[in-house]
Image (cartoon, rainbow, N blue to C red; front, top):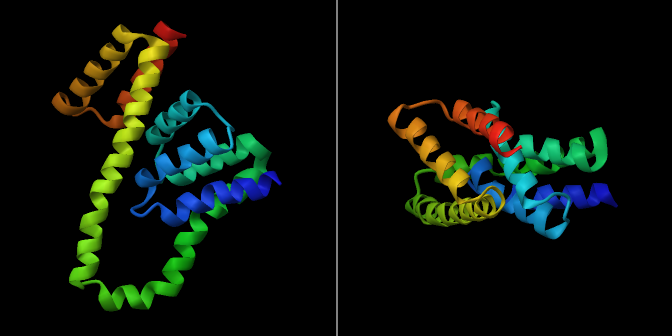
Length: 176
């Protein structure tokens, strides 16, 4: 039964997560935290932070790790397959159609209209993470991490992976 649940939990974000990994993150979070309760929101946010620090697509890293935590190596395989299967199937079936209509104004409009939805989903996820951090770590620690991260990313142009690793280290030292 757990393998079916893993398949469903990652197949749904895989099929409706238009635009790749980042738009799939809130969908995965809803499945693994809210629907199945395999992890807490804080555990999920830490996994997302760690996943962003590693190379490769975030959705498959999340699927593999969560699948492994839930049901070991077979669980990881099922979750990974479920995450990539919709994309692979759609690419195989729709390749000729996509090539034929790639310059269509309707397709370009669809892409333009979906971007705000993705931005809202990511904004809601960021707000959830912020609210949980504010409650768990406290206002001062949260503000320190936000300001330091912003300055490192925007002013000093530090690679996001190093900012995430630095935040993890800060949390381990001061919040652990």
